[in-house]
Image (cartoon, rainbow, N blue to C red; front, side, top):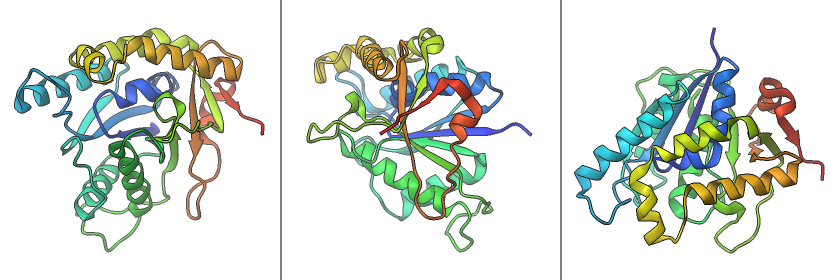
Length: 251
């Protein structure tokens, strides 16, 4: 049976920025890949109506996932209004139960904005809830809890400017061309982010990948930390799958 990896992030393009290279490697290793977003991307524009930008960003996210043979899902909440509550936990748990992932990757628990941090909390609970019987979710529970990994925060720092160091790196040097193409699918964001956040988008992604590469002795890398709390699986499945592409940080 084909193994399944699921990324759940706040917005369309988050996965491509933070772990697109790793998802490409997983797909090449024979894994089924799904990328989901909590939000619709409805605030990521200065020119389009809400309905227009939702359609545009959904199409961009779908196209990006399909570049590596992946599938895109939207959980359907609004940008800026991602809350840790019954509805978000139930809908995210339902998605996890439908997809039945062995491995889940999500946003850093500490990041520059709350949409990312709250998404991280929701996914942590939803993974734990995948096997809980009496949830208000129609999909059947399953065990064990999926392996759970956190990506780097954007630019590798939290909202106080503190650097968050990964515990492992994935060498994505071979995948940078496809990662760049995946991110380039999100055309609607390139001009908006340059105006709103003074971010050169693809160039900024490559610069940070280069930074992580230097730290790990590669050209380009993505950083991760594994959730190792009680009840979660502790084997490093990324290392088992990707072998020498995963560099463990030695403290």
